Image 1: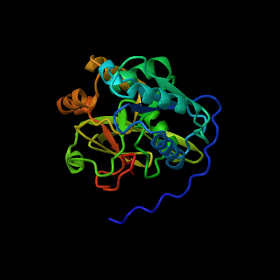
Image 2 (image 1 turned 90 degrees about the horizontal axis):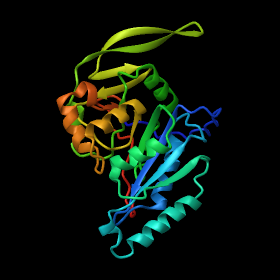
Image 3 (image 1 turned 180 degrees about the vertical axis):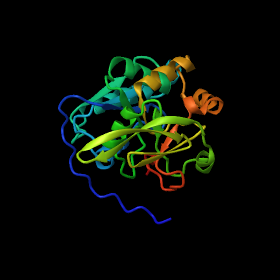
Length: 281
């Protein structure tokens, strides 16, 4: 397999007309080495570089989870948290123009922070969930991906991106979910696009020139998902003060057609789309 070419700089994405199809939630929390303004900014800049067609006024919400009181009162954690929030609020994340900081007033963990941000701020039917220290490494066809998700809401519900040095990545590639679903292909006919309904095995999908593979697993890494899927998922796992991975992993193994994640890109593509940075990276 030949190595992908290095990503070329992407021209500035246009400002939208005010009607957004997608939003972005960037998650962060206070642990010994995190959060970091530098890492948050690196991740945000990677969105501009690699999400092709992403508008500069896309709604971006940076959630900041509050530690449990017992942890918050240790050492200088309270001061660190306050300083991080203040620095975020003062930061310039240009070229993006629509960035809002969403501090949690209590400890909510990952699922609870996402749920809180969705309930109060996200207005779009599709949104990304991005870890604050997980920038993109490769180009993603944002506009085409969002449109294809809108065309196929029952097929493309939760799509994640392969992590660099991801643990058990080969196991994920081997896990499939072979259930046929109806997908909407749009084929060019002169100047128009004609809808053609086809049955596709959900183990491997090719839609509108993009490839995905469906797994019987679930991870909390960077993902793009639908509001409908996440609302349903959060209701099913009920207790939200936790990482949604573990209950969703069980659900995916029990019923992959409803809960298994799709992975962006061909199944045998070994090159990652995202990486996880540390302060010393």
